[in-house]
Length: 358
Ligand code: IPM
Ligand code: MG
Image (cartoon, rainbow, N blue to C red; front, side, top):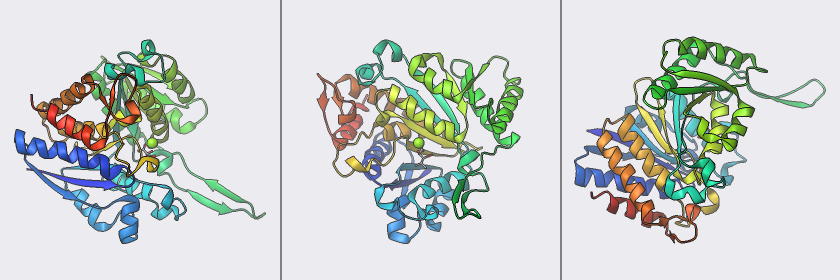
């Protein structure tokens, strides 16, 4: 029996999660997936109901679950709150408390969506990148941090970029292991020309890479990596990088595929337990309109089946269904182009379920 905690969160989170749950329930009803679903609160919705973006009951349920399906957190409504209780703290708290240090963000272009990319089709055709982002360290969590007042009365904000060798090595191993199952190339992204912390990052990556003689390891400064992603993105196989660089580069990589609404993610601990979420945010501007793209969340369920629940055949069934739906020309607004049919969130979820039949 797989225990799954569902955390819809804010904005479009509940809408896209409902469609992914539909897919999970269909796997339960029709394909024998043993499943127990529980629901919980996180983010702004949780703050409104309980005063905390990550209440103890949610954290306890998350610890007890085999896997977590999360929508998105955040929104303008909560932006003026103290940073300690902002919706984002709910997400960061889950990552940190559960030790979900390995964030896998695949950016793959569906050939049906080549027109949806803002880049020329010949630049993005066949794009298939895996970004491995360190998720529980770096400047997101480093101390000291804060805003202090100097003697002259001026305020100063500060954060700390810090990585231990063991943290770098374990995310490196995740990237090398994944590369072994893909194109056997890892590009490590740093800013070793300026930041000592990432000078160490590079050194540890080189050392760790010696255990993977079949994998080609290269290095790139993050500014160049951002440029190369839009210039010649197909040069990349696996990219491994720090928490903040990974945050930025994965949004950039997502857009190469046409829409950030297509990209799933997995955040894994050392045992393979994970939290699964679309990489897009809560998109408050389109929340409640029934037009959000649920495919990133549905594809996150496929990642859950593959990486945590050990059900690769069911994962493929979902991925094939998504391909088929795209083949038939059905599109949500974000990926819609001339000659295709625009549909809403619920209709897209229904279409995927229908396409799972064979
Ligand atoms: C992401 C998001 C989060 C992050 C925010 C919501 C805290 O941008 O998952 O990429 O910065 O990690
Ligand atoms: Mg981000």
